[in-house]
Image (cartoon, rainbow, N blue to C red; front, side, top):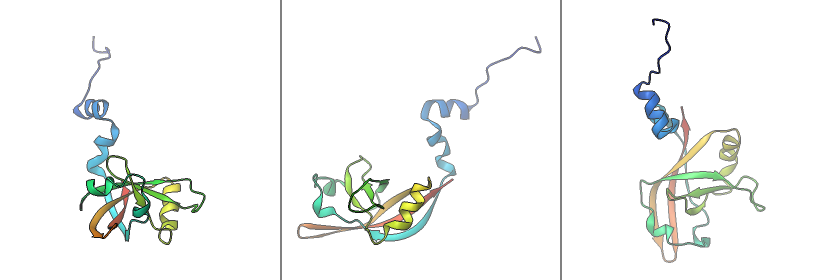
Length: 130
């Protein structure tokens, strides 16, 4: 029976089947710091509770958004997928082009400052590379 086919699963194959390929590739990813900026639009959020839930050091998702006011709009979401605000319009054109080309970007909160009813959130923007 030397020519018999046998099912053979390595630890990597079973890991990919259980957790998905994203988790398997996570150790191979590299974050490349691109830019420091602030989150725009925090005072216009429908759900302001997200501002109490986020903290310095949190990673945020960047998502392109169809927006009639800004064709390069990039929405910033918390880890719970709640809207935090936007990449400022003055900063977003290059990031929008990278995202439209299929690149993955993320942000990390580097500071939060409460000024009365306004919350200023500083972020670093990263290119997630494999």
